[in-house]
Image 1 (cartoon, one colour):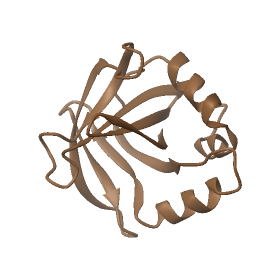
Image 2 (cartoon, rainbow, N blue to C red):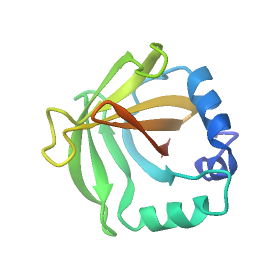
Image 3 (cartoon, rainbow, N blue to C red):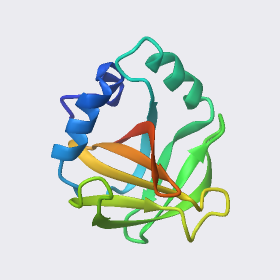
Image 4 (cartoon, rainbow, N blue to C red):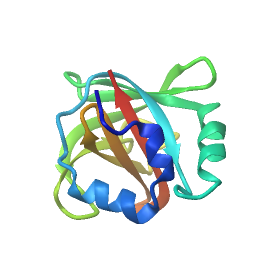
Length: 145
């Protein structure tokens, strides 16, 4: 069981989250469903309302590690959509290993998106988001198992 829950990350500053991501190993490519939480304006009073609002449309991701694929779970019903390829690669942030969630060849809707995740606690992955190679201030966490 992780010592830090994904919801705890809402109280971290963006500097603290950045340090956690940079110091974490890539971890193994996860497998199965993960609960997701959107992280924006963390460490402020806006973080929790934003996460709650985002949760109405995005529930998390389901990864097929053997197949190197994932699908996002969206809508209040958790519909599987918006596929991505999953692989280990070098991070655009620091060149160290990370797990890349690449939508460029799998999704017309999100083809400009690349997510990078690292395992910050057992079963808890912290993610960063790039759109058209530009990093967004949005982060997310995934909890597997």
